[in-house]
Length: 126
Image (cartoon, helix red, strand yellow):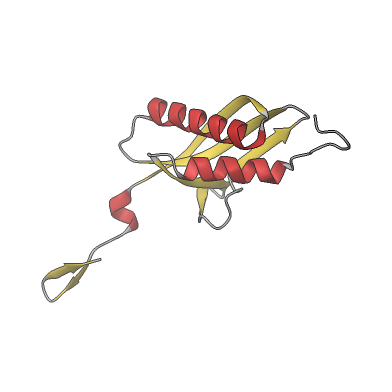
């Protein structure tokens, strides 16, 4: 503990760190803002706290993530890697002990449907 004061880390700071780590995990297509009217709302990288809920104490943090995965990935492996990357990033940057990283898979993204190719005079163009 520092002399002459204390350091507090805001929940939003931990959420941004967790969101960045999640966005850099292979197999994670996006974070999910939650289910509304039966559809998962996907969020761009501009708001990295969407799909991330944290509870930060004095020395510990617990993190809940809602994600959309890429079609064809092995869910158990991707989620395990996600948990490890988020835990490592938060612990390294904040010094907090991450006691749990819970992952809820809320959707699957088909890459080929996200970026349809266009036909121009017989040529494929992205």
